[in-house]
Image (tube, rainbow, N blue to C red):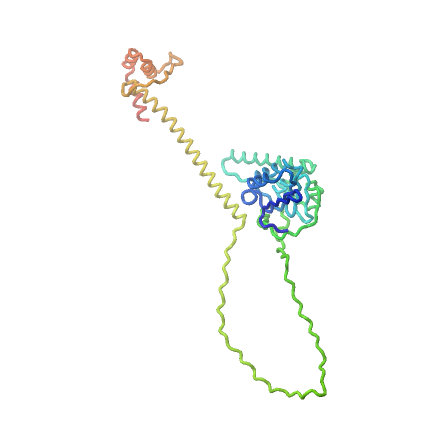
Length: 374
């Protein structure tokens, strides 16, 4: 089978069916949940869905979104594993009410992976998130297969690869179909080399075969007949031997320089480079957020000091007084003379304010100078 793109959707209205082919990674570098959900919404409600899978897996959250969207139509979904269903691709296959698998296919489950950067608390949060994701996956596998959660966890810890017969015996698939020769696929060996137990047959695949191979053309048989000599045939006179022809000397054509083929960057290298860029971007965002938080703290402190300075200036007649809330002293016996003075000024009690100013003039001016320097 050959598809023009690694993710394709084809409607067959004559039989009331829509065929979806996932022949790529799950996530931003392949089949994203956003594009998949958009296409799924366009499928008529009365259509059954034939979901064909040949994928090494991919991002957990995109895979969960695709699984949940298909699960809501589980009665209408038939899954056909045509080559490899690994990692999150197996979770997506669980959405079908009937799962078929090619006789020469592979089915792999393992623990979820993740990348984290930060302090110890952030790394612990990432570990807790991976545990929750693993728990959800164990529940989904157990619900489909009927196996115990302990058995599922043991298989996931070991990164277990199942043949079609083993996947059927374990309960992950419901039917084995004839083996398929996949002529083209996005699953180059580099995408599968990241797993630790990948079967060697998948890391060194046979070159794809062309459908119309050129067959050698047989030479036509030539029948050699015995010579028939007639009595009346003229005598054959041998002609003199011709002089050997002299072949013209041709100048040798210049040897073309070998074509330089630029190395193709593997998807694994692209993913690693993208992860590094994302990590730097997240670090820059964290640094920006920290700077903003520090700036807000300084601004709040400055606003508090500015308000205190304005109140003191109004009490000394250095600026026009404005109406501000009066702060009552919670414990008059331990009151601050400066605060009492300011409160008297704000309350409009000039007599008390004047008396307090004369009594605590040094403390009031010292407080004002302290605020001005801040």
